[in-house]
Image (cartoon, rainbow, N blue to C red; front, top):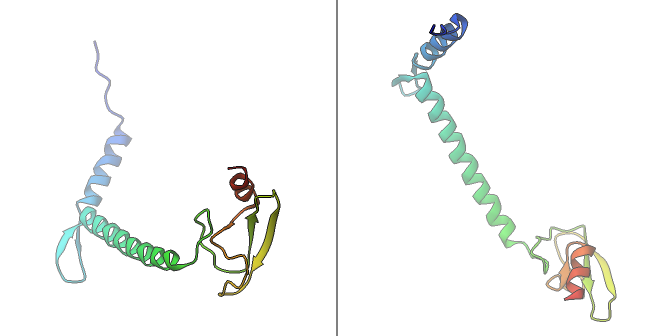
Length: 120
């Protein structure tokens, strides 16, 4: 039985990759670390920044008024109200202030969700 020899190009590519990732890199604070650790630290920092930004934006969205189906209303949107009689009224909210006499608590973001709520 003969063992298959590894592809020389694959072996060389792995050796080059290993050499690259283990290559020393000097950070801004003067500390010398491996390229692999440097890349990992950059990714972790970017992830933390993006997570903080996402939390900040979610806090803003959480303060917005919501429709009956939980969709945030920002203005210039068409909302739909289902009445017990089967009628669905659509109206547009404009600007930062919700001025509709129907209110958004009983309104839905799409006609389909209003129709589904009407059937319940």
